[in-house]
Structures are given as structure tokens and as C-alpha cells.
Length: 226
Image 1 (cartoon, rainbow, N blue to C red):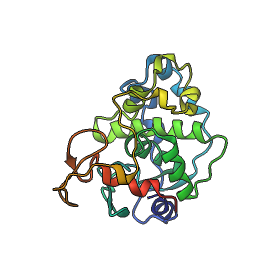
Image 2 (cartoon, rainbow, N blue to C red):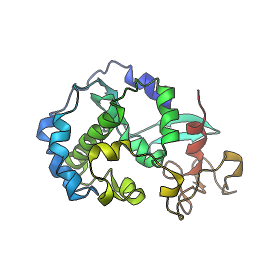
Image 3 (cartoon, rainbow, N blue to C red):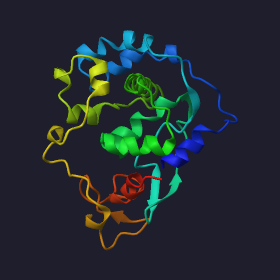
Image 4 (spheres, rainbow, N blue to C red):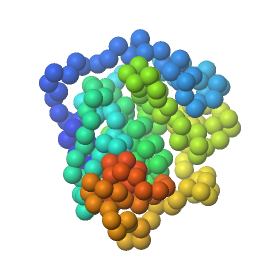
């Protein structure tokens, strides 16, 4: 997936208006409608004001398990380009990080390596800042969005003092709920014997779900370094 997104970011878009009116989105107001606690929401405006200029590329902007398809360990398709836009490349991060990678930084690192991502010292800050933009854009377009919900379920956000601290926080095994399944090698994952590529698969995060949502088949491609 990372190699494919590297190609997406290199595209010269046709028929896509470069740039959104980001200043009109109401970033702090959108953050208030997320799982971020009030003391972090209060920092949003200053945080956004301190971001560097956009490193603008063409982004899919909604890489989730509903939209990424894998068959026999290979990426077979990326669908739903309705949120695609020209934005800072870090705008791409929050959706796969929270949904596909389940906030696992090892998987995020593999994705970034495959993308040949220009990771600098400011990566955590840029990723957090553009997660806030993604929250606001999601609300503007879909009326419902909380990109921080799974992060709030994993970390005690009330105990995290600043957005920079949240952006840089690691994901130790001790921080995971005991009810959260651990990532297993593909050879050890259970698979529904009735599953097909258009049917059901036993997922890592609960009972059987439709392919293209939370399902085990999406993981092998993410675990393979190109």
C-alpha cells in the first residue's frame, strides 16, 4: 500500500482544485466535536498557526479498511476517492494510522518506508496538525467525524498535557487494553472457511465482517516491507 500511495502522491492531478479554504473550516470547533479533551482543544488554534507551509501533493485522504482491498497478500484496489484532494502529504496519515494500523507505530513506520516518506524531526507535529485538519474537513463534508476516537480509547488523554506530547507518544504494549487482540503472523490468524474475497473473513477486531471493512486479509500487505 505504501508503494502505491507513493505513486498517488507523485501524480499531477487533473480536475482537482489545488488547495482547500482551510482557514474557513473552524479547526478548533471541529476538535471540540472529537474525543480530544478540552485542555487539548484549547491549544488547537496556536498549534495550527505554528505549522510549516504545506508540502502539497495529491492525496486519497481516506485510507481505511473499507477502502483498501487485499487478495492473497497483495494490494488489489483502493476505492472511494470522494475525499481526494490536494493537501499536505501529512493529511494522509491519520486515517490509516487510526483505522488500518490500529495506532501501531511499527506498521506506520513500514508504510512510511514504503512511501519513501520524507520523515523529518517535525513529522509528529505535522501529522498531528493535519489530523486536526482532517477532523475539520470530515465534519464539513460528512457532518460526522471523530478521527481521535481510537486514540482516546488507547491513551489517557486527560493525562497528556499538550498536543505535541500526544503527537509524539509511543504505543507500548502495556498501553493496550487486554481486550484488544494482538497482531499475529498471517499463518496463525484464524480464517472463516466459508470466506471468499466477496464474502466474510474472521477479523482481528471482532466477529465476522464484510471484506473491505475490519478484516484480517488487509494485514499481510501492511506487514511486508517492499
